[in-house]
Amino acid sequence: MRFGVVRFPGSNCEQDVVHAVQHLGFDAGYIWHGDTDLAGYDAIVLPGGFSYGDYIRCGAVARFSPVMAEVVRFAERGGPVIGICNGFQILTEAHLLPGALLRNTGLKFVCKPASLRVEESVCQWLDLPPGTVVSVPVNHNEGNFICDDETLERIRGNGQVVLRYCEPDGTTADGGSAPNGALDDIAGITNERGNVFGLMPHPERVVDPVSGGTDGQEFFSAIAERVVNAG
Amino acid sequence: MARFEIYVTYKKGIFDPPGATAERALVNLGYDEVGSVKIGKYIQLEVADGTPMERVREMCDKLLANPVIEDYRIETVGEA
Image (cartoon, rainbow over all chains, first blue to last red; front, side, top):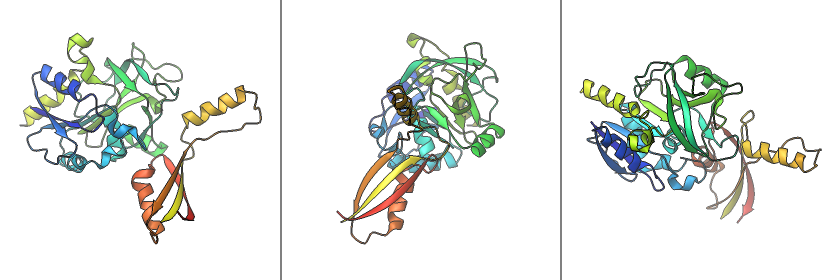
């Protein structure tokens, strides 16, 4: 099982991802944003950071990096792709995922552990039972997920909502539990097929227990198991 | 060179956090007459003479604006 972690100019979480998946016993390699060869990789990770300085809109420029045309083809063939934080923003800009990520409602950069509730979804990246609550840190300024009503209804109906922000006991606070104003408390979504997954929280930061938790392990191990079993 | 000015704003119904904050701040400063504030982007674009408007629109749809959340208005301002 080999994860390919894309490096854009301004990415800053790619080493964390490589460390996390290696900690779990999987292989990983970096892919430069100017490269177009994804051969040998079983899953692609678009990591967090500030690709191209977040200019124009977060992810708007990275989306046109040479590697992205290949990532789109990889995803269209059913290959597993995960976008974390800035990676999620890039996936929405590339139209691999619906909606967009606006500036946080409170206008503040949020950096803290977030409780997330696993929803019943078609996502291939998670095998946790619906209702499971995990604690994964968020670290962003533009994580305020938004889409139009029709899209919201569609992604809810298709089981594309994967994670919602919640309280530590799994309930939703009056007025919502999202630290960023996200519509319907949405923290992560998938495409219809379930192979492309975007989320604002950083599971790679809670894989190695030395960094304060292990709730993120499932986010990389479930897809690895799936790939190996399909192998 | 031909010059265009592009105004990018959030679509109706999309919450604009900086605009809402500026709106509250103005009211707090005593400007009770303030109804609403929307904050967008202003882009000056210079292109080769004779560039069709269609190309400028394409640039907006592809990169300068995100049609999922934003509207844009293009104004021609003549020679750069």
